[in-house]
Length: 63
Image (cartoon, rainbow, N blue to C red; front, side, top):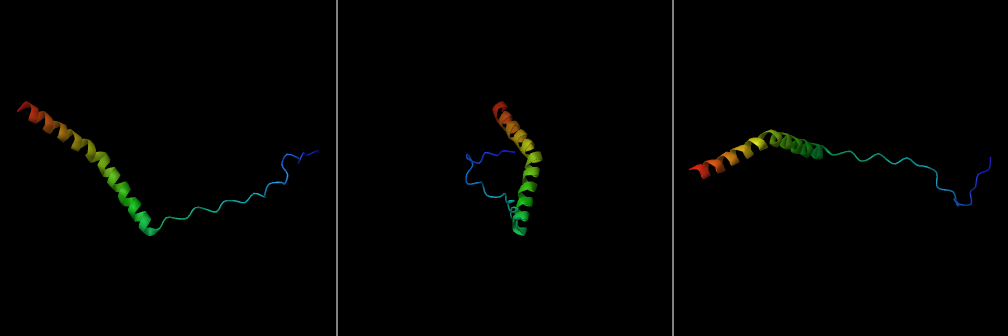
């Protein structure tokens, strides 16, 4: 079989797998867990806080 090497000379380097990415540290895991917990808490409390602010504004307007 004929292979044309004229367009790819010199041949490319042999394929090498990439090293695995570094693992996150214990402190990084802790910070990530706290951030995720806070975001989940705000997912449920945020809409309630927004509703109370809107209710307070409506109460000020009506009084």
